[in-house]
Length: 191
Image (cartoon, rainbow, N blue to C red):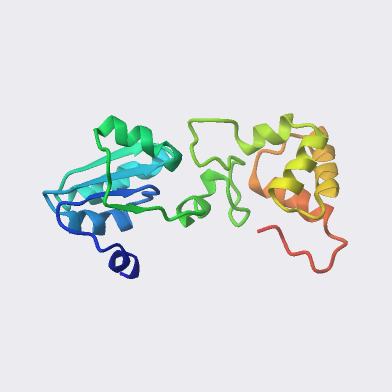
């Protein structure tokens, strides 16, 4: 309600939801722009689009959905022939929809395939990266991208574990990390 009040969406507006998810914000935006307006929805996670589309169709006003990162907004707008928008929403950050689904491989809470990709149609899974990155590359990624103070120790443990068997699940990776950092009483389970 606070977001919608701040946006002051009017009938006939062109609204964009850059991080569509299952369409929570988008449904309310679409209701407000009405039949004379338009909603564009973007999401990097293609798995979100069918559920969002179903929810938006129930509103009955015009909308267009695109499997795209919000960084591709200019191309999406050009494709739709739109040169100006009235409202733009970007709810940035991780979504519980990905974290709670063990098949997505983002969380250690429920064991699942070690994937960790927002867009599963692109790039390599975390399991593939762990299997192919050099020790130095792993340590650098953990240190620079994850702010991990024990990056070297964890990279050592991952390199040793993958020599024994591929690390293919979130549970396997959590176990390797937990063993590598077990001497620190303050260190919690990586979940």
